[in-house]
Image 1 (cartoon, rainbow, N blue to C red):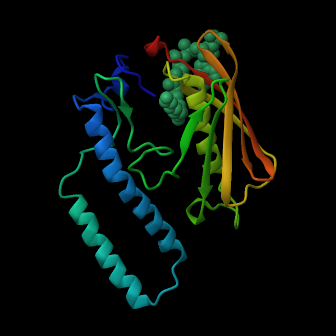
Image 2 (image 1 turned 120 degrees about the vertical axis):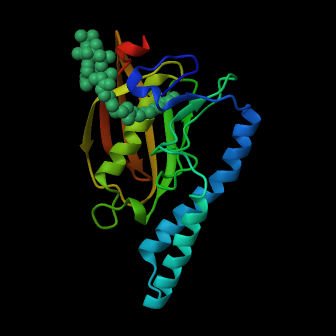
Image 3 (image 1 turned 90 degrees about the vertical axis):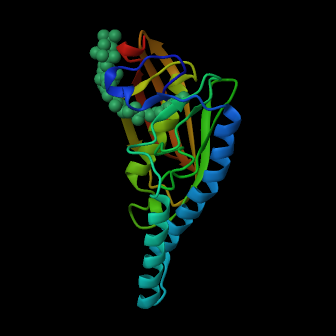
Length: 218
Ligand SMILES: CCCCCCCCCC(=O)SCCNC(=O)CCNC(=O)[C@H](O)C(C)(C)COP(=O)(O)OP(=O)(O)OC[C@H]1O[C@@H](n2cnc3c(N)ncnc32)[C@H](O)[C@@H]1OP(=O)(O)O
């Protein structure tokens, strides 16, 4: 949500961090850590679906605990925040939807078309289940909120979700999903965005939202 050079309010100061790290080094670290997040995401899926014997579960837990201790040997005090360098590169490795180092986030790559359509495809597995075999309604809202926020920000301003309304037209099966969002209109600091979540058979959730350019970002 940050952009280089923008001054967040005091409440955000702790997470909008300028770092004097060259883009090449940011890219290198991202490429190093993304596969770890992929593996942990796989671990989450395996943890849900495994049917191995009790002893094997206990043994795996001990190994996982040991791995956690190794990673915690050196770590940040708090969340990853949103960081930016002097070259205008931003990174938000802990972001709940697109954080490259966040195994909780579905791997989502958000694409902006020249005509303003913002879209993202991903595959939601067992970790995102709500009703049996279906995507949790809150997960759908999570993906929609993020992609709509990207559309609202147009990569050039800070916007925060003000109001988000969702109509769950039919259940979304686990599997491949697509999110699409675009700006419908703008009124002052209010950006009205419309969006859909869908499966290969079509739309499952319709959404509209009001995203606000906060007064502190003007
Ligand atoms: C490229 C990177 C892209 C990243 C995308 C990430 C997407 C992620 C999106 C999120 O998750 S954001 C996190 C969830 N949202 C929040 O935490 C927002 C919390 N709320 C606030 O910070 C403030 O209430 C808010 C910035 C929304 C509004 O505060 P302001 O003081 O700037 O608004 P103000 O009271 O001056 O009102 C400005 C206009 O907006 C309207 N407004 C204010 N709050 C609203 C609201 N909640 N819903 C709808 N409209 C709202 C208000 O009526 C008014 O309309 P008018 O200009 O017509 O008079």
